[in-house]
Image (cartoon, rainbow, N blue to C red; front, side):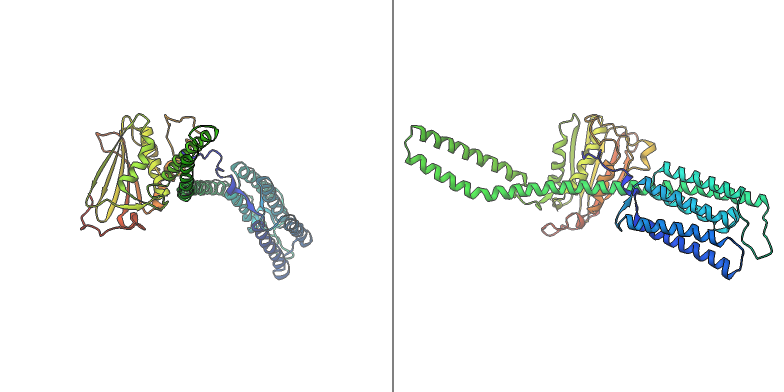
Length: 446
């Protein structure tokens, strides 16, 4: 099992890029300045333009400071990002206080920092910013400068209307905070799970490459070792059979034989022909993933039911890891037996993994294969680091689907008990890249 205990589960995707934040703040400040000048110069409404432009200017200076302090590729930690968003709420509060308070139509911009926080920052920070937004809206409902209006006239809105605006802002802020946080959390979980999948696949490919390199090294070292063996044998014939030199030659002969044994083991790591892209029949594929699982007290039965020659595929770390993980999962839940059924015809290749355990529980049946969904209690490695994160089935399913398979999970029909996982490939997809003889006549796969 892969170890995901040190994997960053969501935190890495919560950092805001300084460049993006600065760009958004420049856009907001330009919009604020344009709205103030348009209201004052074009519409001719009365408002304290000096203090308003001062508030915008202070925010512009903060933007310049952020640009000087950080580079374009820097990311902000949660606390600095939260501080900037909190300042934006306070800045907008000051601007709205000078221009009509909660009655100003632009008061809806309170929702922007809450949305950014919900998508990018943690839940408790979003809650704090939401509370700050509610407090600011309450203050602007209670006290503020008059809403800008034509000179010599004033626009007084009823208190019940202002209260309605406050209620709308509070409900909107809370709803957006919860809704956006949940959506962003699901996205972060999926992104982290996919990253874990890439990590596992890279590890399996690295191990396969190591096997191939070991086999290649054994092949290259075989020739000079054979030469050393011939030289040692000649020395044995030419030197006396007794004495210190003879003992040294005997020791050298023994070590040469040991080196040949070691090289033979290295050659076997790379497969029968030492090629990391060697081809595997369905039988060989199943045997390779089943062998490591046979010593855990559960009977593993392999049934082959196919038409014509067996499908042949290239050695694929994704398929090997995915099938091995599914079989391991079946063994963990099985009462006494796991059955693996291989079927194939001219069009399809299908593998079915069944166990006689309790099956998938109803609360996870509809979410099988999603990241971080698990009911697993591994009886072989309950204390294993990284177990129980709910990534195993997701990673196996994702890797197999990347190889072209369709993976489906269900419980066995009554009165049987247990789970069934079916993996189906188009035969051409499964055999992609392998050197094959002519295919047999077509027949539908049962």
